[in-house]
Length: 258
Image (cartoon, rainbow, N blue to C red; front, top):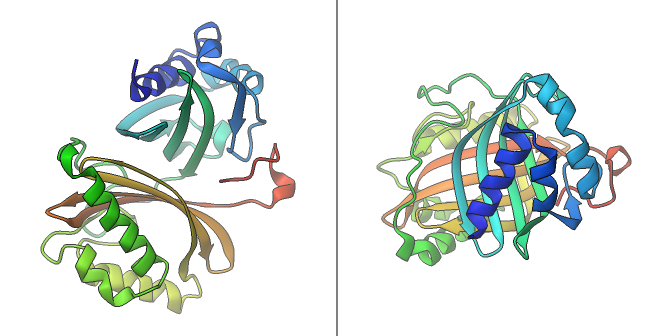
């Protein structure tokens, strides 16, 4: 069974069937949790399933991509009050080891309204293509992260992002490079500048590249989960989830967000 299938079946057992008997063998005995509100180890996670089922939690998957031992899922969780909101848009990252889920990270955000271009945080392209271009697309996304998002050379943005088609799913940003620049300027003027300071993880498969990073929005420590779709060597579509990082004293474990 490949790693993507392992992750999909684990999510089915955990968040669709709420089947503790089926889910427990899918989690490593040394399972490491990075969600701030859930203790580490398999038993606390499995122990939540009854409450999650009672709450009516429903997982709606949109995209899944995998590279090496990592699997990323882009999903919506309905009736997600136990995780902080009625509805949450999520990126879940699973590390697979010896056929089991060994580690989990996530970024969760209550969805905003559709943006100025009529796009939600989850609609758009889902098909994975161009598997032979995975390495090339990954290199473009990482260069965009370094030069534009982390500020090494922002003027290179047109080298990485298409000037002909750039579909945006962030609730505050419309399509096109001009709208992106205007939104970032507006945030900075409002004292809410978005600053990426450290890149932690990348998962690429074909035309999709996912990055996970930390930084700040204004003065608030923030985790950034970004998903890029590339075509012809340029970024043509973007989804993201931003989540505030609570103080270490509020975490249910010592593993940190990353």
